Length: 319
Image (tube, rainbow, N blue to C red):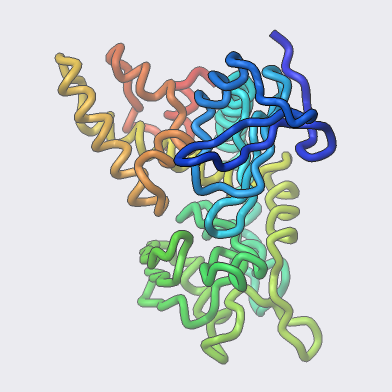
């Protein structure tokens, strides 16, 4: 079954109209859609609160519906086959990142040990924060609109240094307060220099002449590509971290005999992952944990805790 790529709004679609306590669905000719289309739309489970809804007329469109949520964000619902393929590519990319990390870390360790507030050192710090804590990348636009920060929008007041420990505390996505502790001596030493100055100023800002210039999310992503050798992003770090966290939790719980015991173990693994990443349980399981981790656990296969997590996850998942 081949899916067709579509651009919502650039071709006729199905519109949703409020009707009593429910909705009517109208095609491009303002006619009520067929029963088959109604069943397909029902299965999409489009949130009732969405406004300005566009629904694909083609059951094989890769995007099935688009709408605006309560926060004013444009949201997309994809065809199940498209989601499956996208997820497979996402988890494969996370494993490629695991393979690239040893060489990338060596480059970053050299750069973070430089002296001064250089751009190269600021970029190395950004990599280390992603590698250690899987932070969201953040953006000025998201900060202004939602008041939440990520890696590229951290302020100096968001970090505290105690010896080799870095403590981060900042408003994160969905109005959560992120509290993260990292033990990393080179990172702590570098951040002790970058955090000097006005508490409200950007943390990751390098010196350019007499000015301090803030790193942008684009610069960080470009640096990831440079040191890791492929187009990796902050989300790939979160996916790799999520998969490793869940696999590690299951390995420490160990093999269990009954299905109910294994389900409880899986819930604990998802809870540990969600807590570390700052996500809901559903998002952690659906977006950041490779489902093969759970399938293998049901067959008695778990992460090898005697080797590095990146090596272990690649062995477990067959890369």
